[in-house]
Length: 301
Image 1: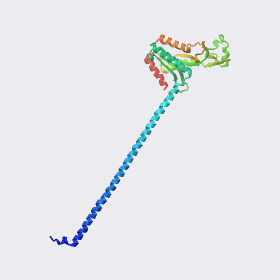
Image 2: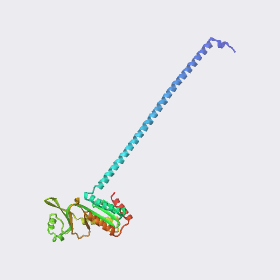
Image 3: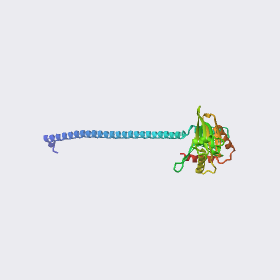
Image 4: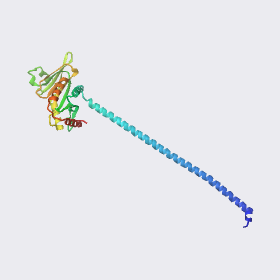
């Protein structure tokens, strides 16, 4: 082999230049590669940061939305409960004081009979403020109280009053009570129909006369309508109950020819139910009473 080539200054110079170029290339390559890696790493970091930020924002939005939905659901639930409570309160307190006292008297009577073991809780059901809707809603009837017992169903029209009652009077009573005719004329009442007048002191020196429109016919019609709507086998018994204000002095004179029972005061109310609950003939079973109650409540959602 010719060694002169390797010792030739030109060859050596060329080789040195090539070596330098290789070294420079390698230095540039590795440096550029490091720059590329840095840029790639920076890009990856920025990309991951954006992904993390997006996912965090999405998670926060999800949690915020979930919290908002939960808040809205809670508000809806609270508002609904509040509305239901208002409706329930409205339903309960659409009764006047007299109806409330009648309710109280009936409930206390039932509790007494149950406590004494004379009846079971299911043997006597008490409903109040019941409505019987009509097809066109123009003739809806309100029933103050319904008492469901195994010996029958009793519909009570409750009046709150003070003073002295002349119940069921008409022109047939004018001879016996001549002063009454003038009240009929003053109040422009139908003399041929039974009327109810209540006399009470408006102040120490004056007397007021209050007139109740014929309540017997209305109460009988409500009882008949209830029987027809529920398709009952037996008649519903209509009752007129006068609840005296503050338990004060009162009296009643019943001149009515109608067989509708008229009761005055808590004692008379209790006496009536004690008599018919224990001495009446059974018409319904406990199951029947529960079904009738459900049917009535369906009419009053």
